[in-house]
Image (cartoon, rainbow, N blue to C red):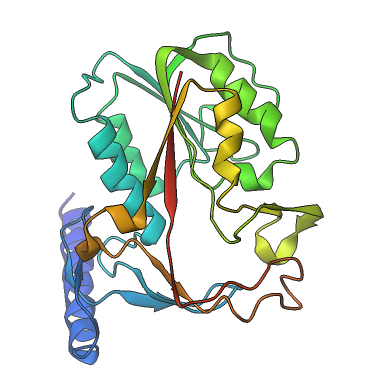
Length: 257
């Protein structure tokens, strides 16, 4: 136990030192606040396969833009709802959202197609659950991987109870949605490039769809995507269309039964 506590203290101290060094090395960068962990200061740039993203990652909790946006939106949506007796399904669960959801909901379950660390291995296109099983479903950046996404949306709607809520964000990387002929391994096997029109699909299955955009929420949290999209299409992303500007909005759709 003493060794375990010593390792934990050492790890926390190491993290604090690395953050102080990062802040010192980036004194000239813009400062922001992470709504998830309370960090204040510059954010880390990251370089995924699709290109450089500036001001993206919190150096303290590792949340990126979409996580901060989703955190703010979900807290707002659930602000007046007693979730202690509600049942939630978290699809493709992000590790640092585990405590946030599991401590809030009375029943919290996880699901994924292949992962072993979840409660259910399921295909969203063919869910094994009975009608009206869950009160809340969260599936972030999942539908862009699913060939028959409308079937998945209808299945999510089917398993929700009356007055149920589904939060189903996808990456907005085009003005108009583009369907790919197959999964692109350079885009984490995306089968489409969702556009601003993608969220219209939810309206065919839900009675109300509320869209929360980066530009409607506090700028101090840095909820935008700073990346050069004028370079698209590229060899790695041949079907992504070019988008002008270096600062792009993200959207969280909240779907109501």
